[in-house]
Amino acid sequence: MTRAVTLDYGGKVQTRDYGGKAQTETLRPGPLRPANIIRAKFPTYKNGLNGIVVKLADGPEMPSLKETVTKETADMLDHRQRLSVRELAMKFEKGLNTATLLSNEVKWRQVALLERDILLKNLKTVLESLRGRVTGKTKAELEDSISMVDILAVQLSKREAELLQQKAEVTELAKSLKLASEDAKKIVDEERASAHTEIESARSSVQRVQQALQEHEKMSRTTGKQDMEELKKEVREARRIKMLHYPSKAMDLENEIKILRKTFVERSTDCVNLLKELELHKRPEGNDIPLFDLEGLQCLGSILRIVSQSSTTMDFSNISIQWFRVHPKESNKEIISGATRSVYAPEPHDVGRYLEAEINYGGEIAIAKTAGPIDPDAGLVDYVETLVRKRETEFNVVVLQLNGIDQPKESVHVLNIGKLRMRLSKGKTVVAKEFYSSSMQLCGVRGGGEAASQAMFWRPRNDLSMVLAFETTRERNTAIMLTRRFAIDCNIILAGPGDKTPW
Image (tube, rainbow, N blue to C red; front, side):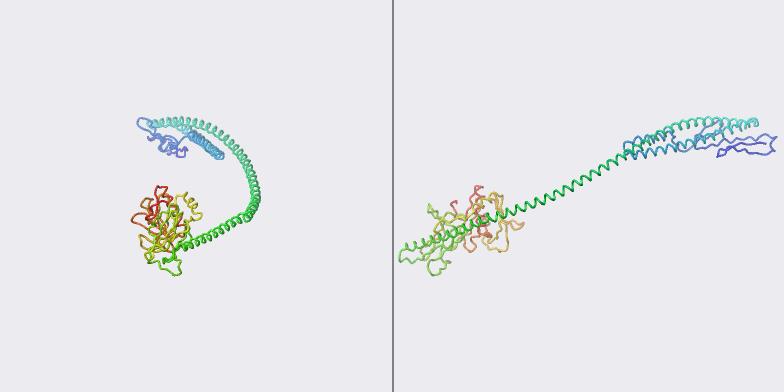
């Protein structure tokens, strides 16, 4: 009976019986099937005309166990500095688990190699038993199969040696990883204990700080209330002292000033009346020219009005009038250009001078003159000196006339007086803006009227002139004095039309 021995895909040996009919006949020539071992792990052998040809199995090459473990260890050592203690311990545990799995895989591979070694020995025994039963070409093929089994045995022995070496290395790495994992766990426990200690100390420190802050807040509230009460007491005391002393002194001074002003006005009125009586006595008998007098306070900010001393009412619209300034020492007259009405409001230029009005009545000249020089406004000079220190000062004005044409009085403009120039504007619109120059003219209004004491004539340039009305008489005189002061600093003298002498 003829038997053929083959190795199936599971690695088991199978014997096939062809029956007793062929016992006396020669075995059929044909190739003997080679051992088919796991193709992904071992090379495949083929028979050829020139002998045995070895061909490697197809597919990707898997990294060895040693390379895998070495790579994992290198990665762990590379990232060790960037990991926390807990992460390092987790990495060590992961490496230990990987090493255990690899060790188990090595064991499985070693068991598989042992089984394959036994199978190869059994196969070689079967082939040896068939050597004497075959002849011819079948015997040659049998010899080739036996040589292939020997080669596989050698390779399996080499592979087994490598696996043993890898097993030893993996075992050592597993031991080192286990020790490192235990050390990491100890470090984690120590760090956790130290962290708990630090947390407790930090909590106690925070509690102490909070207690200190609460105590400080309580003390600050208490001291703040005490300080506030003391300050209130001091303020009350200061107010009481101020009410007791300073107001009474200020009121006394104000009363004294009022009494002095009243006395001065009375004395001035008496003096003017005496001078008028003296003029009446000096007047020659038979002179039919009526006598005229100036009515009003003879000081800056007032209005002087020509009145007749006779009982009859006179109409000055048809009478020629001209006002003059008279120097108290030189007695020379300076004509006031444009002052031809019966009413005239003195301006800062008139302070310290007499004012005189010549009335042409029926071809005869009558004179009305102030009893003394025009007095300044009290405190105005000091106020102007205070404004000089500022770069510019603003006044609210109303434009009454523009180039001799009356304007609506509802619109309010802003007059800005600076150190180098003057500017008149309404909102964002600039009406006039000029630097101080010799062509600029500035003075009080000389045309008369009830608002003459609050009005100012300003000609910024030759083609533009206007009359501005201020809110008060004091503001009008302040603006004139301040403008002339800034112009003098620029070596320019501002005066009205026809004025020749400086003030």
